[in-house]
Image (cartoon, rainbow, N blue to C red; front, side, top):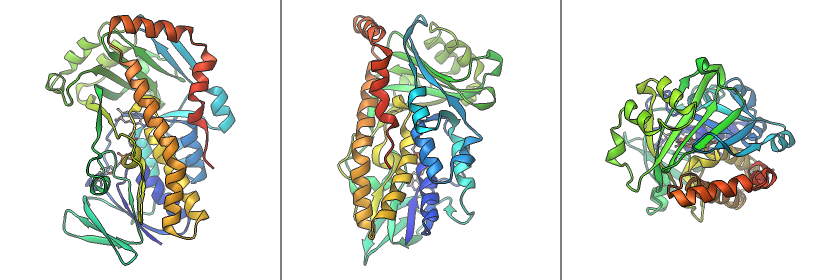
Length: 382
Ligand SMILES: Cc1cc2nc3c(=O)[nH]c(=O)nc-3n(C[C@H](O)[C@H](O)[C@H](O)COP(=O)(O)OP(=O)(O)OC[C@H]3O[C@@H](n4cnc5c(N)ncnc54)[C@H](O)[C@@H]3O)c2cc1C
């Protein structure tokens, strides 16, 4: 079979390797002219590390990873709201949750592909199906034809929008700055991801990466998407917004060069009913983009590749494999999108009375119950 993949992001590169492992031929078409250092950090759950192992990609990625053993949630004063030890889940799966710079993840995945697989500077425009084939058209006027089209073109997927014009990204109600910075001098203990759920709808989180680097994010509520009030804030303005949060939030913001600050609204895709459309399949963020509150977006993009490989091994026809993929992936990814949406709402609560009530409930909630609620993330689909 000859597969056309649109997008050389986390899913596109992982899926390409998965298909080559099965003996198929693959071409990946990426809009960007070069794969530059874009994005900040991501957490990959043990479930995703396990999927990478199944695809023979674990070693390449592992070199860039820092284990994340648990999650600490703190209030405005830095007092614990909840401390979750993910050890019981990760030990069962046999892999750690890890933190990694997105650019390193992309570099590692790319290094595992033959050089002629990825075609850069090829923005996809539209596709059509004919005679058991799919032809895609690119912005430069060129075309490519294959047995199937895999849409790995991210949250604003043009392939999805051709199929479902109304499936526009959904704004979550908060906007976010994020960066990766060298914070070795701050001496933050490795091993924990930490979130501070502050007052006035503000949240700050950080995850230690390798080589003393730290990935942080800082979110604030606003009803207006792409709010002009936040768009042009300087580093000093952002520091001021989060100045009264406990250590190390102000220190990390101060430590980060202004040019490393990335800003963007938090968005997802309201769960859609189908991923499979004949010979066309939606994957990764194109199919099920989630808000980042569970740290599962990239992880689910990786899991998709492993499950697709399993479906293609099992079924004699493409369309049957794609339908099986949809059946196996929709319930899990929908649950993640919905749980993450709710968690985002809970973490960004602004009303002072509800803020206090939420914190009291969280302190009273036994750690075992909180952990049990997250157990589904570590259920692997074999
Ligand atoms: C603030 C934030 C924090 C996050 N934190 C985490 C986290 O901790 N853990 C986690 O697992 N995930 C996290 N994510 C999500 C994660 O980055 C994505 O879920 C993941 O990158 C999805 O992979 P993908 O391959 O589907 O899409 P992407 O990685 O976005 O790749 C899509 C690719 O398609 C290309 N493309 C787009 N349009 C076209 C076109 N028309 N033609 C050709 N190519 C095109 C793009 O250039 C890109 O290379 C976070 C996201 C955000 C915004």
